[in-house]
Image (tube, rainbow, N blue to C red; front, side, top):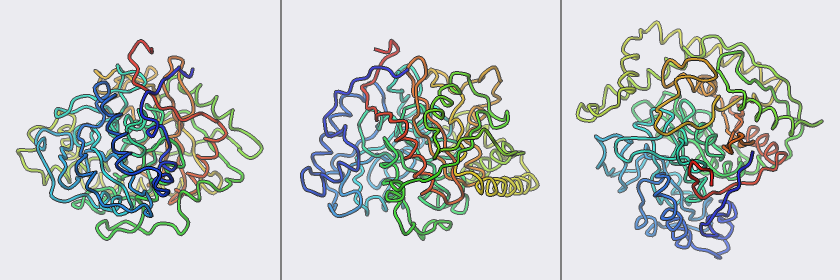
Length: 474
């Protein structure tokens, strides 16, 4: 059921990113106008949601931009895992609570070169670990659809900043669904690109391809535009590759032609799902099915998917932990220390097996995409849960062993290096957003965005900007 919503923010904040960029290019609005509107909206909603935890208006006003650049001077949010020169960057951990970097992340530099103006940092769990956005530095971020509930994580602040109209575009990152889950819980679009498209792992782990940066926006075309601003070869990241000849924004708008979708509600029993979530997804797919959109229920066999994902994640945690000073590590929450302990317990044989498993899963999916354009599946098997809960211990009657287990729908894209997108498609009976995850073929960002835009148009769900609502749903 779609709830009644209100939006009391500045009119500029309600416009799409692409419309605002058009106004900037025509000199009908200025970056200063947008900064003022964005800050005014933050003043309205931040006491209730705690999404944009650090603002940098002086830096933003001093930025040199060109109306002819891709983003033309548009203010954006950067997740508090990526350094921005001269702006407090905490990584959500107490050891870096007062950290002010003297250099920006390469992706931030790229975005600024292409006309973005960084106006604030968005909240994240400690080190981005966990799918519930809270930390000991800034506290809890709340879901604007119901402020008693979580926006998920780790890009929870970014998703909330878009749903409430604080930013037009907001940067996210993803390992185990870290931008897909918040997009799902907040009713916006989030895309995990293929590794190499838009930045990702740290300089110390430059060849590791589990974690990637990605665009978050209010609809598919804005998401495609933001991906264009992020993409391209970068010599600081060894697995990056050039942007496509035709922009993602242009490709997304082209006629998708015949679309072949395989849908799986539970990945052959691999991931549990509540009946209400499955019903919303099935209803949406029924609406988009047509002579041009063919939908079959199918999922390939994906043995040892969870083992491969956990091994990748262990490698990432151990690689970072080994070079982090003890005065920083001493503040880590128990779940992060548990990840490190799991990594310490693994052997070279375990990691070698995981790489074989990843290759087998990739090849299975490569063959799968000879028949289908996308694999459609849930983003999460449950709706948003209370902010007091770090992670659900049970989903649809199935016990979750740890804080990663409930994220199983996110594993495939990460393990196989496939692009994936969360698309809003409906609401639960209590009025909470539900997204459909679409996974595309290797290096298939353009086709994935094209399909997502076509489904978005078929569903005709309006982009919803909202004033935060309390648990009474008023």
